[in-house]
Length: 398
Image (cartoon, rainbow, N blue to C red; front, side):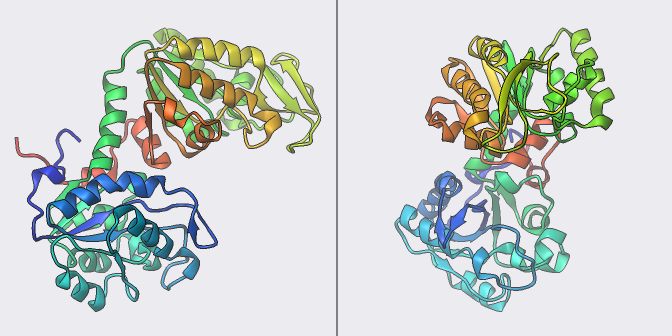
C-alpha cells in the first residue's frame, strides 16, 4: 500500500464517501455471532465521521442467489451491531441497492451521518462487475474507500469497478493488512518459519512455491501432508491424498533442499478407522500407517519437533490447521502448534479462516502479533499476487 493513497491523503469533509467494508459475519437467528470484522472497520468509519464525511457503507453477506431480497442474508443484524459499536444512528436502506431511493438518500446525507446499503450480492451485477451496476454505485459517492480486505481479491463491482469512476483510496484496515503481510514477505526477521496446513496441496501450491523462495523453514501439516508423504514413498492408508499432485510435491521437496530451505513433514500421525469423533485411533510412525486407517492429525513427536522450530523463530506465519481440530480426538497437533505460535517471542501472523478459528478456540488470539481478517485475500498475497481491490486504488503522486 506504500504507493497507494489512503483516506488520510484526501479531504473527505462534506463529501459523500462510499466505504466498502467486509461485514460478511456469522449469524444465528438474526444475531451477529462474531463481530470481529465490524470492529476492525471502526477506525476507518470513525475517522470519516470525525472528519465530517457523509458515509455510505456497502458490504456483501453470505451467498444469496442474487436478483432479489433474501431476509436471511439481510445486512440488518450487521447494521444493528454497528449502531451499538458506533454509538450513533445508521440508516439501513431497503429497496434496490443502487436505485433512485439510494441516490436520493445519499444526496440528503449531512456531515457525519451514516447510511448502509443492503447486501450488494442481492444484485447480480455485483459479482459480474456489471458496468451498469458499477455506474449506479459510483453515482452514490464523491470518494470511494476500500476497507474490505477480506473481499479485495475479488474483481467485483464494488471492489474493482467503482474505482474506475471516482477518486479511490484505501481504509485503515486494508492498509494494515496489506502492509503487514507484504512486510513479512519482503523483509522478514529471521529465522522465518511458515506453517502450512489444510486439505489439498493443489489449494496451497502457489503459497508453498512462493514461501520456499522466502522462508527458512516450511512446516507442512493437515491432510496435504499425506501427498508429501506419498512423494517420499510412504503408504498412507486411506488418508486423503492427491495422487495427481505427488510429483509436484516431490518437486517441491527437491527444490527446497536445493535452496537450503528446511521443508518439514510429519514423522508420526494420529490415525483413525473412520472420519468421526468416536473413531478408533492409533498413533503411528509415517512408515507404519495401516492400510485400512486414515491420518487425521499430526502425531506427538511431530508436534514437539514443529513447536521447537516455531518457538525459536523470529517471524512465524501460520496458514491452515494441522488436523481435524473440530474433533477433540484430533485437535492435539493444531493445539500444540497454536501454543508454540503463542509462545514465540517474534512476529507471529495468522492468516486463513481455519487458523483464526483454531487460535480463537484455544484462547490464544490475544497472544499473537497479527490476525488477518481475510482468508482468500491473504492467501493470494502469500502467493505473491496483486489484489484487484488494491490495484484499483489511486496511486500516490511521486
